[in-house]
Amino acid sequence: MHTLWMRLRLLIRMNWMLNVSALLLLGIGFLFVYSAAFLRHDSAQPVLLYQQQIRWSILGSVAYFGLALCDYRRFRSVTWWCYIVTLILLLMVLVFGIRIGGARRWLALPGVAGMTFQPAELAKFAVVLGVAQFLGRAGPLRTATLLAGVAAITVLPVVLIAVQPDIGTAAVILPVVWGMLFAAGLPLRWVLAPAAAGLLVLSMIFGALILPERWGADPETSQRIAEMTGMREYQRERILVFVYPDRDPMNRGWSKRQSQIAIGSGGIAGKGFLEGTQNILGFLPRTVAPTDFIFSVIAEETGFRGAATVLGLFLLMLYSIGRAALRARDKFGRLLCAGVLLMLFTHIYINIGMTIGVMPVTGLPLPMISYGGSFMVGTMALLGLVQSVYIRRIRFPSADAHPVLGDS
Image (tube, rainbow, N blue to C red; front, side, top):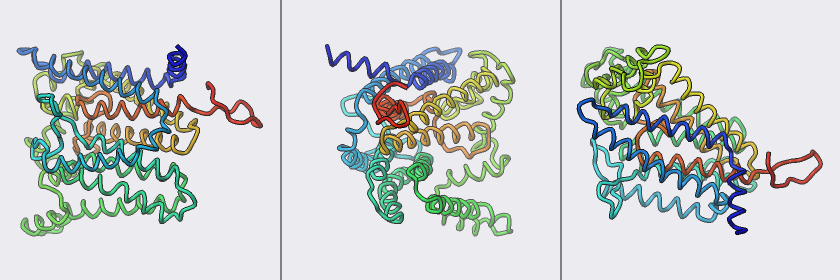
């Protein structure tokens, strides 16, 4: 009975802004996953996706509340085991992974027919946990040593994810780690150095893809220079379509163009639920509408009002995570929250950016809303860690009092 009461007390202390925003975003996801897969002549497919999304959300909720009730400081003892298991799974993907669309990103769940998961989602969890552990416990080390340690934790998972290939997920991890360095209090010049190096690499890649043709190089020379970037053809084409919107409007640029039409045609109030023509008539491809371009479906059917509501809920969620970071009782907890905040912000920024045409199409889903099991469970697990940090926060009742555990 005492244990049950302690668990209830922990639930009462939860960050309810985070609970409410997550619940509302999940509800929006259920509705528009259904809409994104809706076919007027066949009602079976949307029901399957809708029901599957609910199942993944329930599993994610179990992870969310389970991690919230578990003291986040206990993860210090299993951080590196989690990291090693993640590396093993990423290696297994390259050998035994299921190939879909030319990429090996999924492993089959043993004993469950037709069910798969993406180890790359576990890698996000493991990297955030590992970097928070390393920076949170690091003693009086030189800054260069700290950077080398963080790089050692980050590089191998990023490389293994990139060669699947899953450039979008690999690219998300890098700014998250960079932001965690800033949150850890490293001198600004050391934080800006990797950012400058990253911008230089991106500039070189864009230059290699764009400048040879602009400077009058023949197609064979331009192709050879583009191949030096190490990117596959479809990845290079995504960047070129982003720079030149009219380059391939009927193929590579189709989804982006239809997404912009859908968002723009939604107007202020939208066309109504299940009434979005770009979505319902299939102009926005059904292979990506429930996942990468779910925001386009929402904006077309609910207009500016609905899109602004979704953005407002995301802002509320990010604010509540930042609040948990500021009230964390130790550096490890603060860095965990900072990593989760940056992870979600990067996903939101890139996903919505690509749907409105200000970012290249990368295939990153929208947190809590896009259809997908591994991403849903992984996101809910990260939010559960944030709740664990917030529940065990420190309250300072007065300037001269010792810190005590209490309510805000």
